[in-house]
Length: 99
Image (cartoon, rainbow, N blue to C red; front, side, top):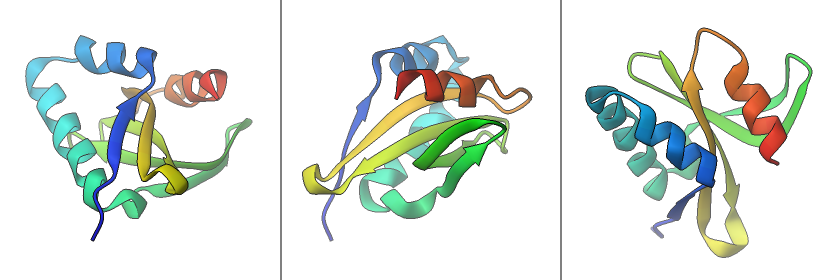
């Protein structure tokens, strides 16, 4: 089994850094799973008017946080695009603006 390298969009890295310590740990735990299981997250497609086809979402912290990411199979790479609270659709808007 190959391990995927994880990289963060600079704004997603800032979003991770801004989370509370315990929430941050939950997110990091989920992101680490993507190293071995990049297809763990659910495909997004078109979400509330945002075209996120080819992107996936993974939940963290009891589904309170969404992690939006994409897989670059040819580079064995997972890129985290956005991290945000589940209450609003801002994470999808952020992800859409970054791709």
